Image 1 (cartoon, rainbow, N blue to C red):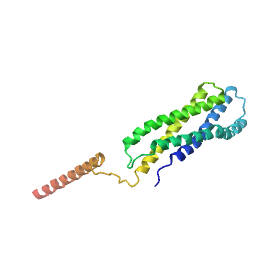
Image 2 (image 1 turned 60 degrees about the vertical axis):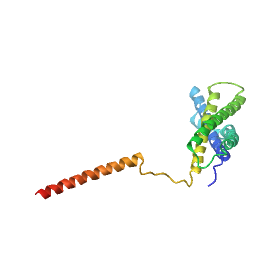
Image 3 (image 1 turned 180 degrees about the vertical axis):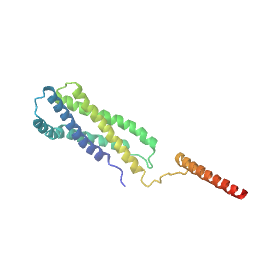
Length: 195
């Protein structure tokens, strides 16, 4: 099994999440615009919502894929020398650094794009998409680390110790039940011997 490709992973997540989040953002704006004056008929609103796929692709999926490609290279650079077997402490220390870098880069990239398109206007509608995109990028990195851990644990023997807490408690419960039944059998046998 080969090591997961960070560049392909982040590019595909950027493309898919960019498209979905772009469509949701445009739908949110259209639904609120319809709610304000309420004059847009539902069939026109439906056509407008379905037509947002093109707009979401241009303003969501393409920038998401480009940023995912750039961040994939950075993620590859930060995880290129992970030693096998993968130790949880090493993943935890790398994860904190990568989360900060990817979240910050995504926020700054999306905010630069939106401020360029909106003419420098700062408001809730220009701040929320970069924040949501940053969380989506952090989730994509989290998924990559799960793939990386699964890749690093291939061929490793799973530890199913008999003396783990749950197995030990189950064994003790079974022994108590057997001991109770055994003591009943002994008592019954002794009563029969006395008779």
